[in-house]
Length: 298
Image 1: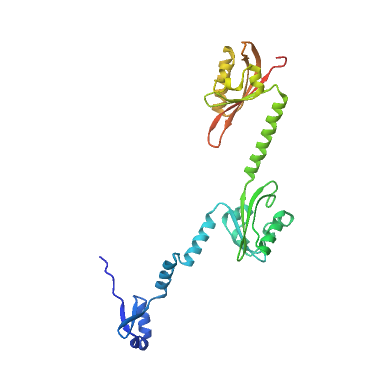
Image 2: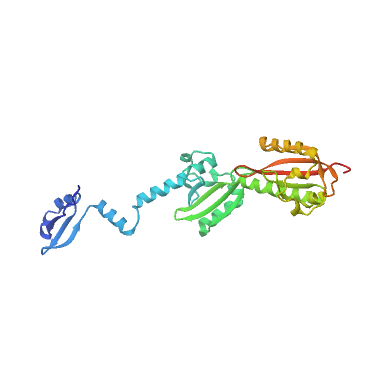
């Protein structure tokens, strides 16, 4: 079992006469300096003092904290570029190096506009000026900073050295927004046509939602077919064809089309073409989308 060593004690007079010796002793364990027989001062090593000081302030030593911060910046997925007030690159993390498509070592000390040739012609250039001159923050999505048709989410953060430019490629998300807008416009166009029905089906083939054109074809209110199996809306002879087409869509992920007979509330049949496509979520299939188009003359 480890025992606690008692500190060495020395009078003030002896300490003054043998300071060099007591300084070396303090490197191994504290030296207590007495005055008139009472403890007055303690001599400890610089490392021990720094450790005590950091404990007192509830902080890690400065060099350890700086190393930890640098490690985090190196590891994060966002690109980080630190620039000084002369627009020179002071530091760049691997993610930013990949975005710029250049080795980090070759970029240090390079002027930012040389590393990003398209910078001067865009909006971002003026925001960087305001960050450096007026310590103004900025966050926004900007296209074409590095490559045509590429969207970057840019955060500008003023720092004592100058500023940090944080970059994230959001091109895929922006393409997703554009695709979503296109789908909304397509749905609006279908609804305006008025004779094309559509329904969203669950994995169990039940109707989750249907538009007015489809419910009008059948002659029912929307609530009447919600949670009903879609095949129940078809003639008996069409159900097997639809089931096979739906299974093919779920199995392969590829759209399918089949000609069927839709049964109305009064028992009449309407010849329709069913176009079936998979509805896929972020991780798995969420069901199917069915487009119902009456045959010409129906």
